[in-house]
Image 1 (cartoon, rainbow over the protein chains, first blue to last red):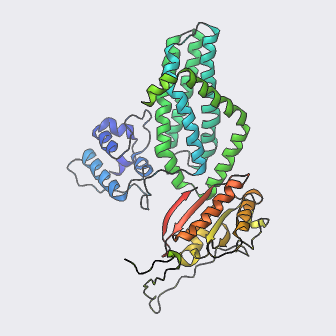
Image 2 (cartoon, each protein chain N blue to C red):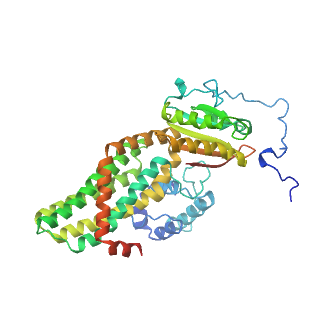
Length: 267
Length: 156
C-alpha cells in the first residue's frame, strides 16, 4: 500500500479505473485533471477528510489495488483532526479568489467571443489581441505572478500539487502563444481552438485552487506568513491599480456586448 | 430550565478538576511574554516591540482559561489585553488599535476572546478600528470556551 501512496494519481487511475469513481465519492476530483502528477498521499492529505472518512477511503483504495490481501492501511501522514469543511479564506487568499472571479467572468465569454472570429480585418484582430492582453497582463503577469513569485514560494516547490499548478500555468501560456500564432496565420479555427483550450484549462485550474489548494495552504501558512503575503499582495495591487481598473472595464464592456451569452452560462 | 437568567458572562460555574497527584512531575512552562506593559490603555503603539509585529489582543480572562496560552497563542507576538465589558474609555481602545495598524504597521492582529457574549465587544472594537484605518491588516479572531478549548477561529 505504501508504494501506491507514493504513486502519481494519473498512473493509478489509468491502472485501476475504479479509483477515480471512489475518489469522486469523497469530493476528490482527480479524474478530469489533465496533469495528474500529484501523489496519492498528498492528495488525501490536501483534501483534509475527517479521520473516519480517510480511513474508509484508504480501505476502499486498498480493496481495489490489493484485492483479497490483508494490507496495513496507513494514514496520509496528517497528525491532527480534520478542520471544519466550510471554506473560509484568509485575507490574501480572498484577494486571489476575487481575481479568479474576474478571470472566470472573462473565460465565460470565450465561446461568444469566438463565435464570430474575424482574423481578416484589423478591427477583428484587434479584438482578439485585446483578449490576449487581458490574459497576459491580468491573468498571467498580475495574478499568476502573485501566486508563483509570492504564494508558492512559502511552500516546498517540489510538492507535486505545486508542480501541477505550474504546469497548468505553462499550458495556459502555450495556448495564448497558439492564439497569437494563429492570428499571424489568419487562422480563425486555430484562434478558436486555443481559446477554447485555455478556457477549459483555466476553469478547472481555478476550481482546484479555490476548493482544494488555497484552503490547504491556509491551513499550513503561519499567521506571520499570512500578514506578509497580504502586505506584498497589496504592494502589487498598488502598482497595478490603474491597469486593474482598465481590465475591469474591459470585462464589463465584453459582458455588455455578449450579455445573452453570459446569461446562458449562468443558467 | 436554568434558574439563572442574567448575563452569561457573570454566571457562576464550578469546574471539577482532579488535583495533581503528590510527587507527580510538574513541567515548568517558560513565559512567552516579551514586553511590559500589556494593558491596552497603557501600551504604546510607538514601542519597538510592536513595529511590524504580529500582535495578540487578548480578553483579560483568556490567559487564565487556556492552559497553554503562552506557547499556543502568545509565543512570538506582541500583547495587549483588555476587557470589553468592564473597562472604561473604550473609544481610546479603537484609536489605540488603529494606531497599531497605521503607526506601528503591525503585520497581523489576533483577537482572542472568551465565548461569553460580552467578549464579542473586543472583536467589534478591532473591526471598528480596521474600518477606520487607512492601512489594512489581516485580523483573525479566536473564541475560547470557559475551559480554554478553541471553539472557533477565522479571519475577519
